[in-house]
Image 1 (cartoon, rainbow, N blue to C red):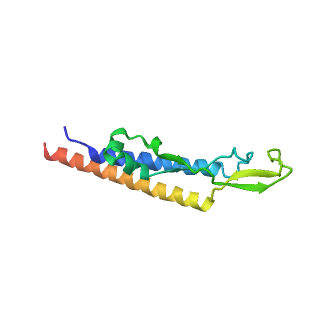
Image 2: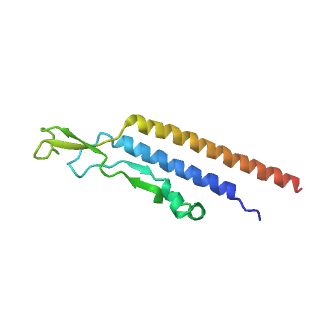
Image 3: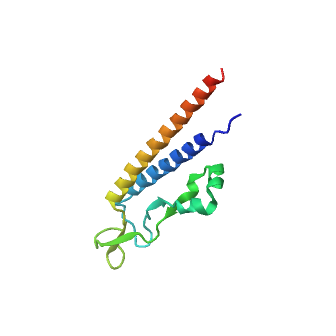
Length: 136
């Protein structure tokens, strides 16, 4: 039977972009989450350089995009709110340093990339259908 690498590549791309959407949504949802200093939410993103380290072929074999999630440690901002219940001795509360514009651009880019992968998947499916028609 034919090797359907095009379907696998498109599927991996869609899974990667879905994860990117989920992480951006999670970052936006936690943007105003106050915590004690040192205990805050840290933004998550996809570290695509990990794909080249593991090798694209190995990545395609596993199709495990969850291994690409990275946490940006230290991306927090401290705000002086002495009356906040989570404030420390100095009156500081920690918030994630998440930029809404950056996250919205990530969402838009991920949606467009997901759509492109879906179109590539459908084009591959059409080509396979046409090839099967030729064989009749």
